[in-house]
Image (cartoon, rainbow, N blue to C red; front, side, top):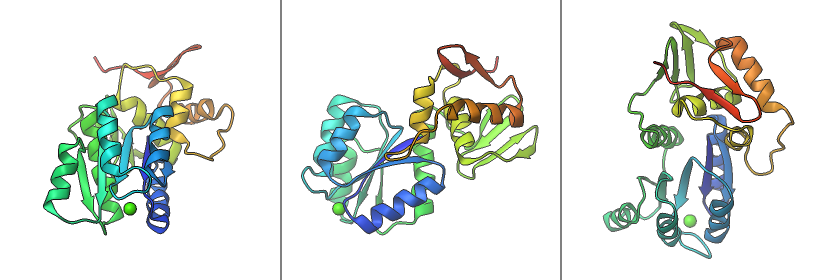
Length: 220
Ligand code: CA
């Protein structure tokens, strides 16, 4: 799952990026409104974490521009201004949730996972697929009740495919969910991760469509 983090405070941005990466997200970090706009124009994100007070283009203006262009990207706004008016304005401009600074990193991650579930039409905390169960908030995976240990990237791949069963994901789309800016994409890494996932979760969970991509079929 790739997140665009927009925050001009270097210390806070660095801390949030590190925390989100540790939670298994790929993170691009933009430090002003115009850089964020350029990123949103060229990359595909699962979530946007948006500070409101930004140089060059305010978070509120960016949000209005985004909602005029693409309605579905879930947005969580960060605001230092703890006034009801700011929060209401942000939600009215199309934000899905908000946090007031200073906030707890665990709460941010929990809210982002909730937004991901909602945007995928999932209401359950645990994604079920046959005997497979995956809980994003705790990064737990089990098969028939037996815990299975996946790496952060393996987990992200299974999570992305499970959120949209029946939908084919290309290798490039899966790479986008795994790597942030400046991270080198290892060639064949998706194939290698899929290989490991199959060893751990069974060979028939993820189907390969040669030359197209990967899919987890819907359970009948
Ligand atoms: Ca700011």
